[in-house]
Image (tube, rainbow, N blue to C red):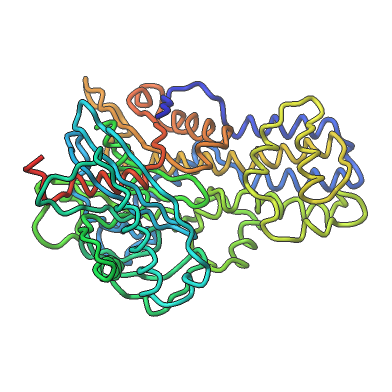
Length: 496
């Protein structure tokens, strides 16, 4: 697991963006089409600006919305969902546990043998299964039967190394990465399908109940110990290796955050307080919006043309699904209004999402003197055979502006969580360590993004407080995290 101290001295400020754009400006003519290109670039840079004062406003707004979402359902754009996870892994867990991670067109089944604090994860095995397209739009029983059959086949390959004590039922952590209204740790009704699934009869139904019935039909004796969101799984995986983990953030195709809240700080919680005094909250922070967010004309048009206008605003400006699309929209405006690619607008440039964030990351990371990678990407993706060096520098500047805004707003969100927990400042004579577990391809693979996010968080915290904050990469949290949550909520804890 990689660790990055927030104190890392990576410089990432609005001023650096401005310098990068200035270099481009000086090398271009100030009239004609280049003047129009630069005008678009300058306006975009100004609209995306994230000075420290704005980041603090965003963080404060995030904290206010967190309070409102904890007070009542529907009280905030942040759903602040109660996960019913009140015991995170301690490292003492022992035994054999299973996980099922369903989040898209593939699902993964996993088994993990835990050996307590000394041995930790003794052994793990997993298998990935593709879901046939017709099952994604067919009947509920057919889908869950297919999943249960795959799980039963996987259990049948269990070797002697994975020993289940006599009299024990196998226990499973179920990661279900679709919107669910959870009613307990092991039950939750499907709100809606996403990611290409459309099985109408399953909407409103308990997904744990559906899987239980399917397991019964295929003769698989297994108890679902925990139904979890992938961000909650990442938090569990992070906490297993480091007891100072207080929150988890996924920055990938989408984005979300979860954190550990005091049970007494959740007004909408009814019933007896958990013995641990804690409750994991799934924020669903991608839906955050605020007048302080620096939105541009390109963000507004992207949102308007999306499948969910007015929703997931934060996600649409910081997550991997959208960063490349924002770049495409700015380049299209430059092509249409300033003949950036010549007299004809490249037809490929009109195709939504043709520029993906990995393409943008590869271009942004180009350090060759002639920006060769930028040129080849534009040629391959947009079918523009030749580009000048100054055109490529404009593309780099756009990548920098878009990634910097996303990274700094991500840092502001994390800072908002730390403020809500009272961990944004150092206490008297006390260094209260706080670790943020991170996962997702955007964080892992887009170096400029993750480094900028970490340095921006340090800037928000200040030198003294940032010394007690650490960002760690918690890889594959949603898989092993689910198995760990099954272990920490096992019926057989006292026997371990």
